[in-house]
Length: 268
Image 1 (tube, rainbow, N blue to C red):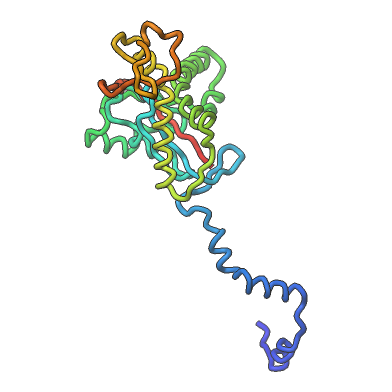
Image 2: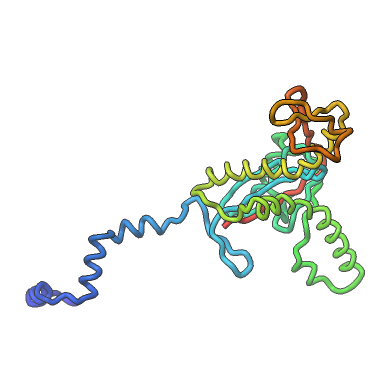
């Protein structure tokens, strides 16, 4: 270490400042550099970056559980982007599933401690059957033959069953244009996801609800001014813009107990 002498200290005090040093000094007085770094460095402490393929993303994940019979979303869970999918499987099940279909990200779910604890507490049935997709790398390493062809056929059938879980994400991304988060923190974004997927369920069940109303002979439709317009069962073809009178009845959509799909989606 070089020792500083009195002569060097005197020279440093009388040294002429360069234009760069003057500019940085003025900028530091206008915008303090430590305060600026503290403002822009932590983008969101509750979110995290994750790599998907060869591309890095920063944000969160939306894990959902979908009923196999109705196609409606019954469970939503929001985590940071670096959280593994299989660790939150028990939070996506309502407890009465007989069969659960999942993608390759949930491999080994039947051996997880969270699943065993939930089954001991009665949150998940102990006789539940897990249908998890096989990883593509394992199928590629299999030798050519009847076994590989049968495995590919089975995986294709499981994919055809599991593909309907992508429909809620189609609605929320393409119809609602919700592809990027606009709030900070998982609490706000999780609340927005609950509202978005609730609206997705209405979109998915819209045709079923309207068909049930139109096939009901006793259902009457009311205009916006309150006057009864017509019976939708007999005048369905020339029905004007109107809304159903639901004040005298209650529409319930039972959630069928059966299969369940679980899926996750990353939101940057």
